[in-house]
Image (tube, rainbow over all chains, first blue to last red; front, side, top):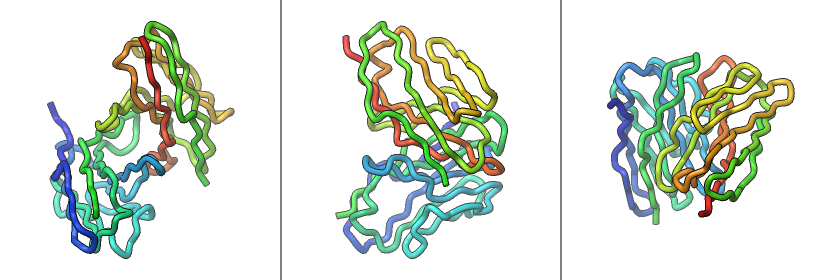
Length: 114
Length: 110
């Protein structure tokens, strides 16, 4: 049963600390997405990769956030320095480019910045 | 710009039928998706429409009218487990990006 995995599932950190979230997409998928979900804003796209190349990170605060795909089995989202307003659930999703194929979401990382 | 609207909350009774509407205005369109999200869980795929008309999948159906920028998700024979948020998302033309609405929280009562 193929699924997207994310680590950690929960993270509590203090303001100013670096946070790294990891995602393993489903094997064979060629697109990876990072989303942030809050009660106020809903699900927002932060970054998007196709065939490991970053295609769109316009939704991401560039001064503190960075997203990478060092290889096809790993995507990372880093926040440095973290701020309380970054508290949210961060989802990674993967899929195939185009067609009717849906995005498959990981379980999410619940981040709390105090 | 892109704008997706759906009601914030709806309630319904077990066994009933409920229709969740979604209207969208996007600069490009390449399909509309519905996702279900239970509290504390990840969104899961329900349906996909790219052509006008109705797609039926068991108790769930989804309709699309591209000329009106309108879709709905129809849930029949409601069960308690259908209590969840339902997210409408439009895929941007030429990319794989999904733009999500803020979701409709559905509560099913006995």
